[in-house]
Length: 117
Length: 117
Image (cartoon, rainbow over all chains, first blue to last red; front, side, top):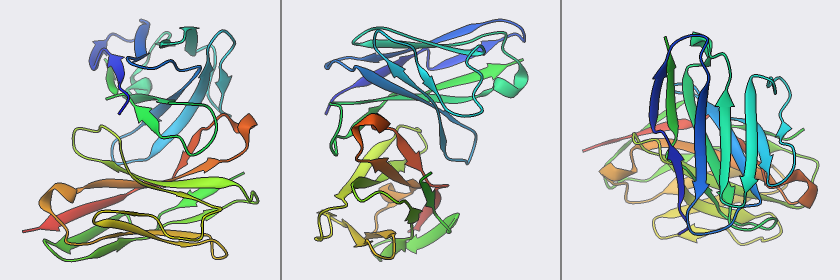
């Protein structure tokens, strides 16, 4: 199957700093990528849809100025958590469908654990 | 808006036995897809099985099968001959068939499955 990578896998930062998380589709092009947030023992909550070459679409309640998404190429989307605070500590997962539309499987990255001190 | 509900936070099964995980969903759409994902302790999301809403036949993948009841909006997962490696969090997910929805997944709350040796 197709591979999606994330970097870093684990990051610890101080409160007030910004953190960038990368999501890459390694062997296919992804015009769309999704960013999810997952708290321990909870479900995946969609944060935003990342669209190559255009602005991301954010879900209701997600602060777009805090969670900056850039999808500059067909294989890379980045999520920047700006001025991170302890409540932003979570597990962030990206995914990308192989093709738009249809029952296409979405391929998930391994996730990034963010801890804000 | 579409919703997905998993009413069993935890389930337990004896090795080699069969277990069924429940999922219900709500939608007004006629074209959609349903999925079961497995999330082991590594937290890597793994697709278990998918079902197209327009197909009446229940999907089957080796030891995994679904009972898709479209009228009742029910989509349960049956795991036969349970193995220790099946222990994980299982998520039911919905995806709209509308192209303008972008292919985002809506997840249920998850069911944590433990397998007893």
